[in-house]
Image (cartoon, rainbow, N blue to C red):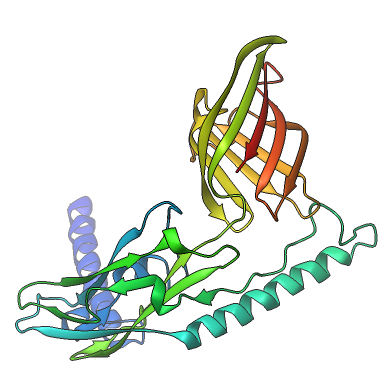
Length: 308
């Protein structure tokens, strides 16, 4: 009998706690009734990348195509059309450049706080290379005025960037934002499309690779090689190692002209083969470089020469 009473008492106590919790949530500062929230206009990739620059893969040999989506964020689908107007946000670029410049300077100062460090060290932090808003002559947008139809959430503009006409030495960005909308504009409203430029990216018509396996010649040949940009100081040979093995090779160019290398099975495991650089040199003026490195504990030795 005592066990039955305890059982019912436990049930009543649990119910009271649940009711109390619900009442507490609805009446304290942490409760938010999302069902009553209004609709807002946003750039969905801005939400995904938290308003930070979104690196666009581009080719120097052909125009680059991209779609910029706008979205209606709401509980229910919009019952009437929603209009939005896109624009280019120069102020965002100025603010971002200032913040990145300050961060780079702080990193340099922190590095030099160790008196054994010098500005000529390969690991000395790079200065920030400011972004430039892309000139109108290098891109077109199908329309800056977009309409999301009733019963739908998204609309998009087609963007064509003439990356095959990029002059060398520029760090272009297209900082899209929603400048006007028929509904409230979300804080997820900055989509900077970053066309990162590296002097070591692009196509090398005179590429040579020499591969040794345990000291014996495995492969020696010439080819055309295209390297993709990872960031301003890093490029990748996507899909291969030495243009012979399937995999992924990443080249990072240090401040003193030397090169750090990663080699692995894929971009998600970029150095699973344990690349070790033997020798290297690079010329940022021409974009040419040479590197010799080993993988798998020295079993394979690669000597690569990249000339335009």
